[in-house]
Amino acid sequence: MLNYGYAILYVRAWQALLAAKLNPFDSIIHVRQEGKPTLVYDFVEIFRSQVVDRVVISLVQKRQDLEVRNGLLTDKTRQLLVKSIMERLARYEKYQGEEMKMEQIMLRQAKLLAKAFEGTDRFKPYVAKW
Image 1: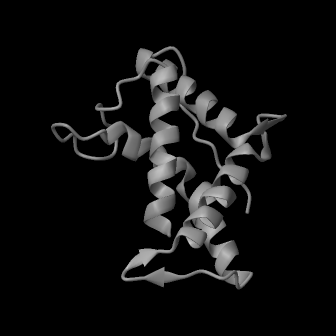
Image 2: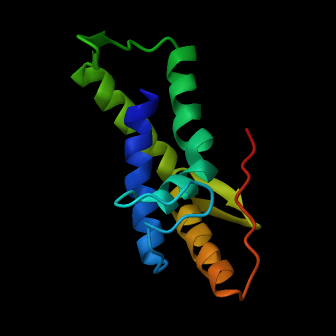
């Protein structure tokens, strides 16, 4: 479930980085690898626990009907996971004194990262409250 959720988050992170005119193949934390979007991997670290881990833990704690067959999530489980993650991305959070959706926070963070790369601003990563 975590890996499936991270795949969704990678797509959203990639979109935010491109919208901020950043190269997904650059890198900060991960070692740059030919053909790998290492900046996406770096950027996802900021949001992984809030967007995916929190959702998966919640589904397990609520004893949702989660199933794996032949090593794969069932369609029903995948649908529930995707729905829950999409709801999490659309949920409003407090960010810099404003209420905004997690997807908007990701975009704002990507733009701040671009400014940091340009040397015009310091990057301060989003830190959410549990």
